[in-house]
Length: 161
Image (cartoon, rainbow, N blue to C red; front, side, top):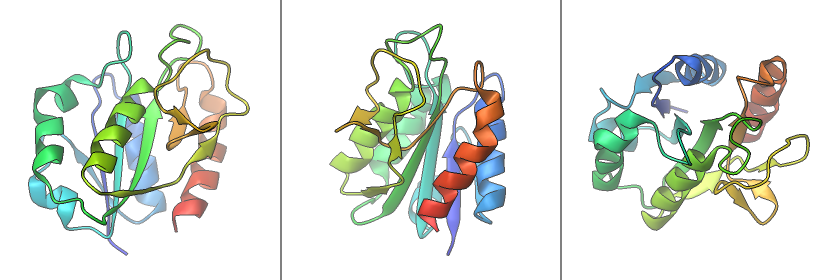
C-alpha cells in the first residue's frame, strides 16, 4: 500500500505528528506547501493533516494554496484519512476544526473517509470535526495531552491498515 501524509505546519507540532504517522504506515510525509496534484492522487491511502488556528481556521499553507491543490485533485473513490492538532483548553469552541474543514472538502470531491475516532477522553465544547458523535479522524492535543499522542496514533493507524 502506498501512503502519502500531506500536512501543513508552522510551529512544527503537526509536522512531527505527520512524520510519526508516515513512519508507522511506511508512507511519505509531504509538506502541503511542496505537494503536487500527483501527491494527492498517486497513493492508495491519502492522509491529510492540519493544525487549527484562530477561531477554527486551516493552517496558512493550506489556506494559501493547499486547498486549491486538493480541489484540483481527482479524489473520486480515493481512500482518505484525516488528523488534526489543536488545543482543547485554550480553544474549546474550535478544537480541531481544520480537520472538519478538510473532511468537508474531500467528501465533496467523492473521497471515502476512514479512521473516525471516539470523542471520549477529550474536553472541548465544540468542533467542526465532530460528526454523529465521532471525530472525522485522529484528534490530537499536543499542547495539553502530548503524553496521549503515541497511544492515539497507534490505535488510529491500526484502523487504517
